Image (cartoon, rainbow, N blue to C red):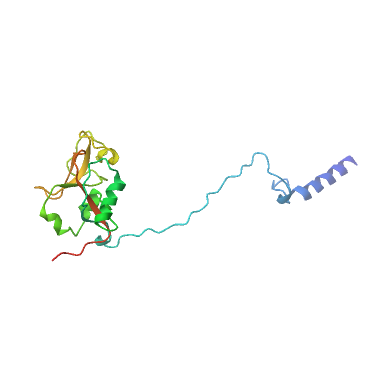
Length: 183
């Protein structure tokens, strides 16, 4: 009699909790978490925003000229970009590579002049060996011992080099808009 009662209890338990072979309960909604099971949070997928891809050389950022305002190297990159935007709509501080890849150099630059600050994103030109960032310590220094990257218009037209941060210079400005060739 005891064996028969145990057998009925076993069958009843299988009906309520499922087969002991599968290990899964028959009605998962009526039980709580099983000890040892962890809930692993799943990442929420973010929408993918396509970025514009330049299709031609002229679609890339191009050197459009130099700012009309000049600064030492301690005014910050946003002040420098604002000076570019005051001189050329929708422009900002050029990187060395943007200057190097420009295909439509403004003819006014050929008149010569001094030099202009540019953002050094890649090592190019002559470098001062002890200055790791070559941007006047993040455009926050006008110390005569710090150096920033410039494009030069003197005897070596278009030369990229480093110059001391305490001297005021214009800013090299780049924009997606390629200026119309002057006649």
